[in-house]
Length: 115
Length: 112
Image (cartoon, rainbow over the protein chains, first blue to last red):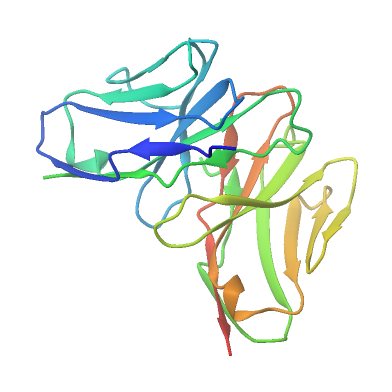
């Protein structure tokens, strides 16, 4: 069983640039969520994709956008990067309704530094 | 608006003793609670969960207690082992909802 994988693991960008982060969900998981974890804080929900549609969003501006592909992999795009966007970005997958524990399966994260 | 709060940033415990990690929540709609463990350079991994219809759930050395009237839950680890040293996140969700709300985490140090 393949776990959740994310790429790249680390990257550095400058203010105003755009970034794309990628996630391959765990085998059989059709739902992907993205979280932002700033230093010293817990993961903050950005949005969730189910069957290629966004079906839930947290308190993040529209410059945070995403995609989900037919193979359930996903992308997180952030435009007009700001210094406060520096964080660990976590992707998590699961199968809603059939996973009795309700647990999320996380990747290792992509650490973004904005200079 | 912090709906899930972990007020202790860190906790240090001697090996073999009990570790107690605490968590408070404010949203009475939450009906499912989880604990995740995170090692450096790894993503969080699920540890144990509890539904609001229960007040206790055990899994080996880990027990989660839920006090709905106080909107409080706790994770007990006994006996604590050095390999338990990690950051522990308390999380909450609403069944049928689409997001999980996490606390800021508590860093546990288990000394040998």
